[in-house]
Image 1: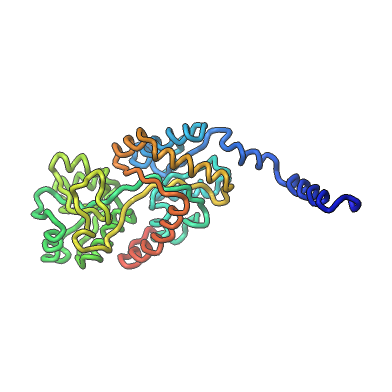
Image 2: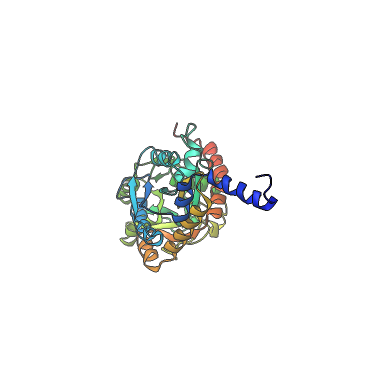
Length: 329
């Protein structure tokens, strides 16, 4: 060996070094995917995330050249499914499709999470966003944000607003709204959108905050009315409904979003393939139409933007939780 030319010796050493790496791992990364991919959805079947996830999975499978199989692992506000994925092999064959509940809400309200929202996951990209909206019973004499503020301010603590649960994005949006406007209202948590919507239509509660997707059908029948969106931009699904920001409350900026993620440690080339496939999925006209039909506004953001969103939103959610004493412990 010592008599070999220097460059030849270096080449041999490099080959020996590569030989120390698992050839199967190198091949798997290069050929990914070679078999079906599992997409874990941490919500029960039939819900909005599940329905949208199935639409995304169908097209994502075509882009990847392998089936993407849905596996529902619901429980503990997405903790069950998220924890499962965080402990899976970081090879790209086990993915998570979840909302901000997993990445920014749970860390703000739970002290002993079995996963870390940043250290346990590799974001692939944002698939879409869902605006949140302040709704009112049709009999409440309020049409605009100004009228709402004046109406509630006239009787501090008298009125309540409903949401689809304690520690949900709807409650966080509500508490952000109250902080920005200086209003005092009682939060009434429900177990899901359906019972909250039933009580809003029946007049048991005067106001509620829900997703645009959950509200559209009831807005059309006139039993409830839209006051304002809690996002800074109007929704493509309700283009005539203004935002709180338009009415002078720029601090009200809260929505829900869907993020595709993998366990931390995902090989760079596998991550790149998944990111490209997700971008193509969300760009597909048929997929976009189906998602819009379910109330999700398709809007792809790459892995870097997804990570930035989590890092930006985490301290904001923790601040809201601390201020409003929101906890799941």
